[in-house]
Image (cartoon, rainbow, N blue to C red; front, side, top):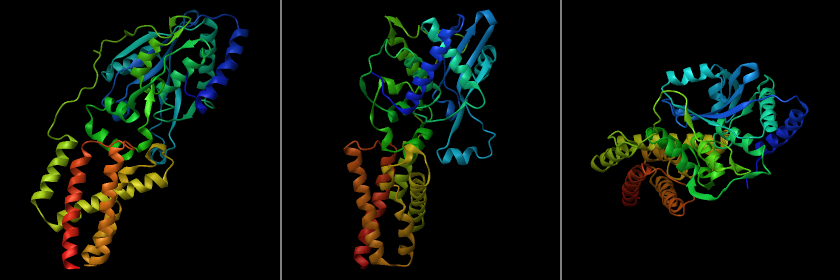
Length: 380
C-alpha cells in the first residue's frame, strides 16, 4: 500500500510508542489541521510549504509545528549543503505570527482539518512535542523523501496504517517532471537543476511519491480515507492572499532562446578563440559534475549522464590543439564526439531526462567538434 523506507519505519515505531503513552494519559482535546502554503520568490520557496497546526482549547494554545526550519547563519551551511549534509529542524511558532510572515511574503495559506481518532491525535501531539526538544529536533533533509511535506505525509499516514485506504498507482510522471511543474516561472533554475540532477530522479513515481510536494499532500490527503472518512477535509483559505499557481510565460531570455543565440553565433563566426571559450566553459562545468558525482554525498547528482556532453575532456583537448598535437587531438575529439552520440542514446531510451534547452548547446558542440575533426584529418 505504502512505499517503505528507513524514515518511514522510524516514525512507525515512534508513533506506536506515543500511541501507548497517549492512551495512558487523561483525555485532552486537540484540533489538528494541515496548512499548505503558496510559492514564494526565492528558489527554496518555489515548491510551497506544509506545516501542522495544533489547537488546544483547554490551554488556549494555537501553535504551528514546522519541519522546514534551517539555519542560514551556520558558517558551514553552504559547505554542508554542497556536500549533501543538510540539517533541517522542527520548529514551533504561534499561528498568528506564522500567518503574518506569509502575508508579508504575499503567499497564500490554506487549512485542512485532519480527521484522526482522539487517541491518535493525542499521540501525534505528544510525538511532535518530544521531537521539538533541542536534542531531537534536527533531521537530515532529503528534498524528495524527507522534507517538510513528506515528513507530515509519513506521520499522518502511518498512524492509521492498518485502517487507511489509499489508492497508490504508479503514474506517468517523474520527480523531474514534478520539479519542472513548480519552476514554470523560473526556467533558469529548472535549467540548472536539469544539469545537476541525474537519472535517479527519472523513475516513474506513485501518488505517495508525489506528496513530497505540499500541493499533492493536500490533494491526495483528501483522497485517503479512514473508515470511509477523508483524512483531510477540503481546504479553506485563512489569509487574504489570492491563490495562484506558477504559469509558463515565453521570454526572449529563456534558456532555450539563449542557447539558440549561441548556436547561431557558432554557425556564423568561425573564430578559434570563441570555440576555445565554449570548450573551456563546458569543460569546467563537466569537471564540476565529476566533483559532485564522486566528491560529495549528494545522492541525486550521482550517475549523471549529462557528463557525456558536458565533458571535462574539453579541458584536455584545448592544450593539445594549441600545441598542434594533431594525432592526440584527433583521438581526444573522437572520444568526445562518441560521448555525444551516447547522449542521444541515453535520451532516446529514456535512461535520463534532458532539458530541451540542452539541444542547441549539444548541436553547437557537435558543429565545432566535426569542423575541427575534419580539419585534423586534413593536416595529419
